[in-house]
Length: 357
Image 1: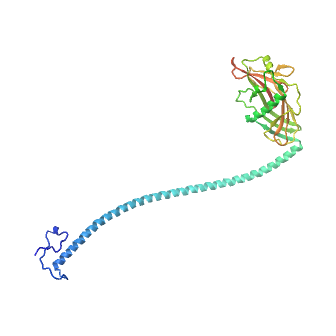
Image 2 (image 1 turned 90 degrees about the vertical axis):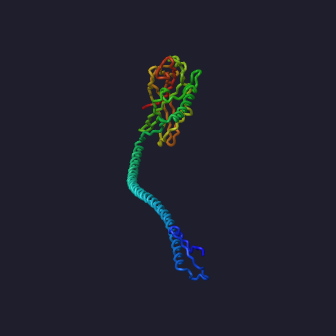
Image 3 (image 1 turned 180 degrees about the vertical axis):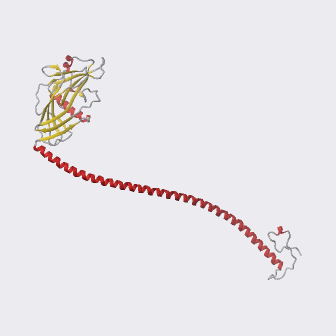
C-alpha cells in the first residue's frame, strides 16, 4: 500500500520527520480514526490555531502600532489644544481686566459728566441772574438815554466783503463827488487795501462802533483808498500831479444822491438819529512820497486827510446809508517799491480815509 500522508501539519518539515501510516480503508468512517489519526488531526488543528494566532499577533501588533500612533497624534493635538485653551484663558483674563478698566473709566466719565451737568446748571443759573442784572442795567441806561458802544461793522479780516463796500463807495464817489482830468476815468483806478498797495503786512481796521451818551458817539475806521498804478516812470513834480488830478464836481449833493448803500455786519437794535462827524488822519508814507491836496480854488501840499461823515443806521436790519466826503481831494504820489531807483515806477493815490480813533 502506498504511503498516504494522513495529516500534513504546516510545520512537519521543520520537525524532521514525516507522518505516514499504512492502513486498510474502512467501509464506514463513523468514529473510525485511530488514536494516531486523532492525534495528528489535533496536531494539525493546533498548528492552524498557532498560525491563526501568529497572524492575529502580527495584525494585532500592526493595529497596536496604529493605535499607539493615533494616541500620540491625539496627545499632541490634546497638548496643542490645552496650550490654546490656556492662552485663551489668559486672553479672557486680560479682557476681563480691560473690561474692568473700561468700566472704571466709564464710571469716572459718568462722574465727571454729572459734575459738568451740575456746573452747567449752576452756570445757567448764574447766566439767568446775570441776564436779569444786564436787563436792569439796560433799562437804567435807557432811562439815562445811554447806549453802550455797539460794533455794527467789522470787515478787518474780510477783504472780499470790503472790496464790495469799496466798490459801492467808488461808484458813488466818481458819480457825485469828483470828475477826472482829460484822458482819465474811474476804470484806471483800483482798490488799495493799504496806504501802499504793495504793503501786504499791514492790516488796517475797517470798523464802525456806535453808541449814545446824550448824543451819538461814533468811532469809525474806514480807509477808502484808490490807486492808479504806474502813472510816472520817475518822481513827479507837483505840477505833474495837479495836471492829472481829479477835481470836485460843481453840483451839490441832495438826499437822492447824498449816500451810498452800506451793509452792516451787525444789527444795531436801537433808534438812532443820523450820525454826523468830522475826522482827520495823517498817512505815513515813504520819505520820497508827495502828498498834495486839491480843491476847486487852490492846490497845496499837506499831510492830513480830513473828511466829513454822515451815517444813517436802521434800528432793525443791516441796510445802512453812508456818505464820506473829503474836505479837499487828498492825493499822494508814491513809489511802487520800498527801494527807490531810477527804474522805479510811481503810483497816484486818492485817500478818503475816515478815522477818528
